[in-house]
Image 1 (spheres, each protein chain N blue to C red):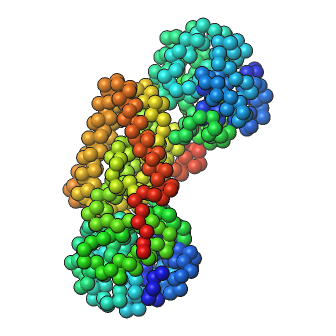
Image 2 (image 1 turned 45 degrees about the vertical axis):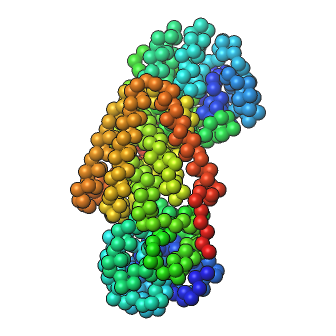
Image 3 (image 1 turned 60 degrees about the vertical axis):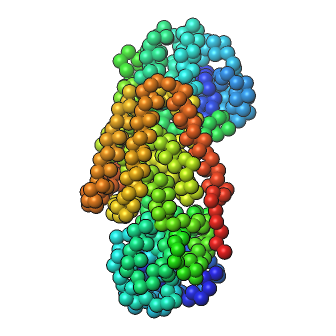
Length: 298
Length: 298
């Protein structure tokens, strides 16, 4: 696993970056190389070092690039432009680059525009995380059995794709291949729209006495709304078109549900609820069995 | 606690009814009386009896009413009409009646119309449950530390109100008083609209390859969509007006979010997300401390 990789550099050692480090160091005996954490804040890096997420810290990405074979961008999307420019000036043929950004078309376009060899940039999206942030919430098992999308576009170097797949496989993830566009449409549906809905549900109840009686249903449905607003403003903005399309479809569904309820046709309403109930149960069963759309890394 | 109550009868021994029985028998040493389970299916009652949720079972509500002091209706809302008619024909002055129905105005109107002494019907709504159903999922701690709304309308007999409050206090719940109308508006906001949103999010992604990459965010946001469709068709239908109003407000919020995203004003979008994030965090903190709007039973 991760053959020929002596050094992995993680830029951004928050929840995701920190957890990648922990998982590699604690749960991946086949990787015996070194992990460098790069960031902008000394204190965050120091915390990641103290927690055992990384072996070494640096504030200077160009300085560590020459000895890095696998570079993982785990910062908010807003920093990618500047980071890719730094990488472009210090690129070398043995460098494979990936990222954990929540949208992919914009990032791949950036990489294609900025990097001298964008064929060695293979974007990925490990579908794991939580509403918490910072290295103190890092967990070595954050990724285990979760899906990870590895972007598959013509022109990617096979070696780079292979290495990125090996990384996520080593962390116990279930791999799926998608183009950047397929990815962005998919995550709009199963992540960005649910996130938007959670935010809107909180706005609906904000400041109302009703919140005093909110319980498990509200807690689960709105949990993600507590996430970092800056990170999510980035995510929504970088996936604008698919999210706008999803919002339109959601508005249509609200109108449809409204009609079902207003028409006092309990059976039609029940059928609409039953279709969702059975689809949700099926999804949970296939997610548990890990069967849904799997593709193992070679 | 529950002074003068020798026999509590629970109609409907599913998740909620079964859990009330378990909680009274296992977690409430001050109640030493008898618990009768009434239902329509011998098999469900037998299961509840085998699991220790009830002391005795019966298919015949009128037969057990004379020795019942506290009657708890824990069936789906659709059965209340028929049940209240049975109670009306066998009512007695020592009988206090409550229910666990998810909406209250319709139930209180039914009780006022059907019962000879509606002043002894004090509706309640323990905000606990899950997407599971049946006595096999009953848990004695289902209600602990959760909010319970006890309906407060002019004309209720103080003794009946007192008894119903004692019941939920004995199960460890945090009590709140509301009129039926206040209750229905509140639960539309914090339960029925989140439920509708979860159902619509599942419809949005149903049959799409995107489901293969859905993870924790989708799982939490849509969990309640797996609930029993018949129960929820009842709930939505019985709370039609407040839910329709909530759907309209949700549609307005979608339009507002759409504009923020379309206008490419990242700061305005971030502020909108930040307001929800901070409200959601505040709510979680107050729910943990149990501070929100508490009112202890005397």
